[in-house]
Length: 556
Image (cartoon, rainbow, N blue to C red; front, side, top):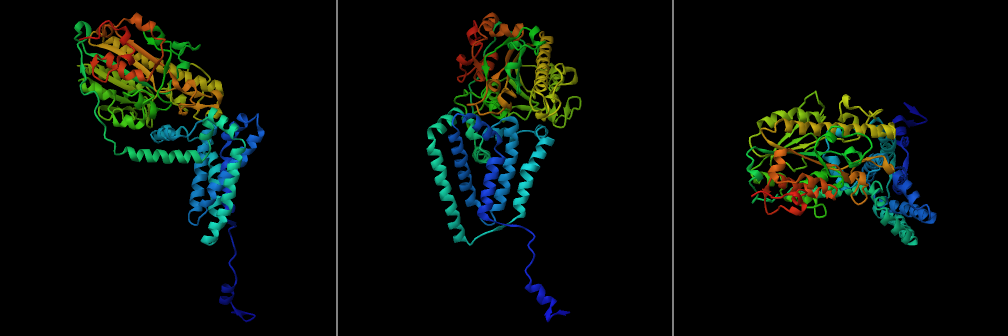
């Protein structure tokens, strides 16, 4: 078939194909992506900037102009063929996810926050994957990412692209530098005073901190743990008490001192413990603001100021020193693991038990600790330390941490999407978790008292970190320590000892009560537990043992 002398085949070859996708220059796309990320995924950064720069609007304008130029200068060189789309799409999705947690919870995504997130359980992570999060990811992340993937990018020849990119990047860098220099004194003062502000620039800091975490994790894989306290041995208890001496160390989770009625909180969140002969230390601070930091730190021989994650891995901890002394040491976990603290001792993961009376998926309420405790106590034949790692008050699903019986404070927030609850509902749910922890701790003490004829028992409770419940726009925990509010670092610390246990230490309980108001911290746990178990070793420091000043005789 022919038309006007032109065959169908010739017509098909000569006609240009219809363009179904819009085209865009590589630099233009880079600029659009850079500005989208800067202004669409940095809501918290810009809100805080507007507040902090309220008295100098010219400095705020310089900040906007300078960062815009800086982002363009950063993303333009990435607009290379085969690189631009994957990198831009990754940055958009990462920024969308990060912006949700930064904007909703006020958190800073540093390397330790990423470590904490990586080590969480699927169920715990699931509490954060709410419908609101999914909608946010769709609108802020997926749709823009699809648009980037859909458009066709026009790329210049290599040398032309290099020259063109340079013509964009150099002026942007100059503008960035001039903007910073123009109000340097203001910028220096505000960013020094509000150090969290720079940490919130998304996605630059989150991605950079993820890389930092990956590098550190790779370096840590070849660490060999060195022994500690191999000279440890048990001293004869005062009075030569023959019964096994048993200490149950309870590692609390996300319990903040501000909500413990033992420390003066107006609500009766500790009704059971308040009736028992416990010593409460009201001025105790944590080593970190997240489990992945605090748990290994609190069992480490290093004080907070000297502790690093690497040191914690390189050196044995309290559990090892107790084992060197011939004490039976076990770790029961009802959380996200021991963070390598219990790698060399007997461990039990209760969240894997599948006990439907207490568990849903891989999460269990702390009632399972009490349920399993009787059998363990009845099997004790020697001096022992049992460490119980609670799920405690871990958020945002506070409602999942306590049974129906403990919904005393109502109405309580019944979702992990805290934005759907009022401040009162969030606090009510959180206070119910503290109420249930009170019941668990009192139950442990009761079980030890019931066996006082067979063993000398004690309980040592200390939370790993606190929690923000909306104060100053912050929720959950994990803030960098240098900017962390008091509610994330001020933690409850409680000790109970049976009569025989107290006697075996030569402890003056009146003295202990009188000194309880002194400043305490996670630094005290290592040495205080050694002191409780009458362990002598060269690594024991009596100045960090909270009981040492009140002991008439440390044993022999």
